[in-house]
Image 1: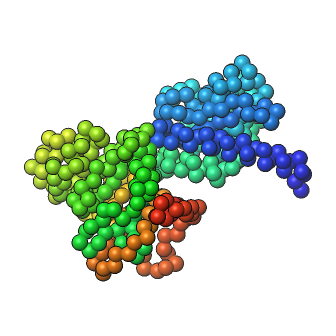
Image 2: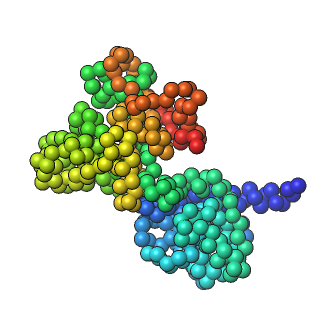
Image 3: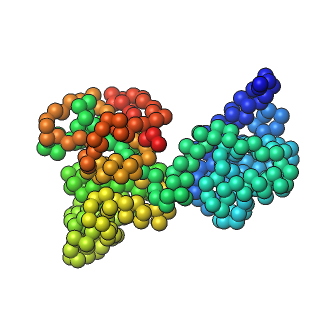
Length: 374
């Protein structure tokens, strides 16, 4: 049976960890391919130090929090860290040693680090030094926070964020291809925020041709995403906005051996990188592309269409997160495209279901955000 004292202790621990998790999110878009991490230092029920991992290559959250309170004043504090402290030398020294040297009393940890170079060894190092360690505080939330990092570490592929805007009748464009603008200004502003924190943005050749997009974040965010066009013949026109804005953001055309040497050369002369993908089918090519982006340590990939690219990713079960913007408009038309093409799913029982769904109104639109259930 849990006593009232223990219950209040658990509630307090969760509240402090919740603060650390909120703090960690301030590093989004700046720390990748590292994970977002937050740390709160507490003495006698009061927060005395705060820190988060602010940028890739910079001090980790624990070090920032110790600096905040003053390392000489940290003796006896409780540390609440969203992710297991590292115990190895990388771009910075081991956080376990920093906590040990500061003589903290206890360390509360959200979740274990999936990185094989840590994976429980940080916890073990703290305990060997005589520090009490409590694990699994708001663990589900802590794991969600580092999910893109965990996927990159384990699967060596980026976290795939699918985004589309559609009408009430499920159309992403009219039968003639008209699609500007389905969603309103508030929805488009959120998309620009997404663009500003991801490593790459993917569209298909047809979407690039019909919309002639820039695929840049306006205003700029903490990251400049590599724009990727899945274009088997490398036929993207050099006069397109994507090529003409090469000085604003990198552009990668993912082609196949169907692309002519002349077209490749034309794009490359314009500053475009042309990558040759193996595989005969769209799904095989997408798999090869995801693997290549993973090798490049790109953590988050935003997929903005079109329907065949999104459909192929659905067929591969490769979508990790979904953002849908539903506008109060009706287009109709049997030939008007829907957001998801591909082979599709035969039985409703096998349909992709979302969990942790959040629904909110953005201007006149409805924004649906969630994660595919495992």
